[in-house]
Length: 299
Image (cartoon, rainbow, N blue to C red; front, side, top):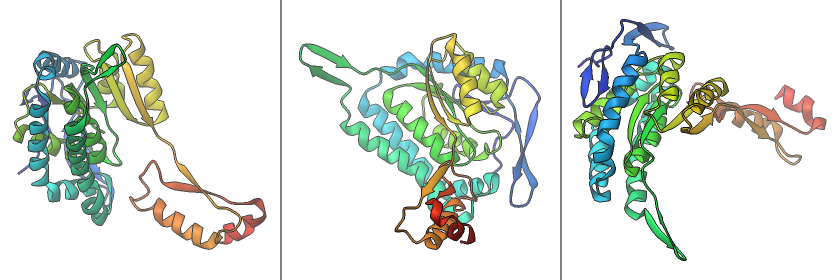
């Protein structure tokens, strides 16, 4: 069954975009276009935020048991589509199929299951001497996710938002959006209340910018580049919304004096390329003692 690439998921229904802009989704292993997605604009963001705001009061008032039940249903629906998720992630962003099956798809399910376990034991209210501290949902959450670990990043934002009682608008990466459409279908199949989860595809400078500026969004979580993080923080400042940033960067492998340099170089290269080199923690630098630079270069 084809995915609803020309639709957004807003208010519990698959809706037509306001504009006509489209973007290709390219399989990096073949450089072939495998789909075209609709691109949203500020008007689509307005619709999604309105749906999330309308649903917030009711969803924020739900019981912890009710939210656990919803997350259980989501996890169950997710599990039935693990194979499809792995195949789709592999095609849209180029992960080797073994990694897509062994890591990408399972990590999304893992975040859902772990959130359920944490929620069952989480204390929303506690007493500190004469002060009663109550944790409440922040409001409507704007979630912006990257292309390189799409299911991991979507699930690790959506699941805690639901656990806290927040409603949300998700903007996945426009270069790897197909697995996000599957996730929206999972949310629908699980009976997620209308407006709790909304998805709008689009570009960062349009949809991402509109989300960051929107007065109806209370919190923005972005995983992406430094450039995107700076743009979101600036756009969010006028409405004094909370901003959580996980910004890109590569990691270094530090080789100490007593280490086997050739072994370290081989292991670092293998770890770097595990996800076709598309991991923010990929160790693309090898730092070695100056006296062993020649040995390291040869390795």
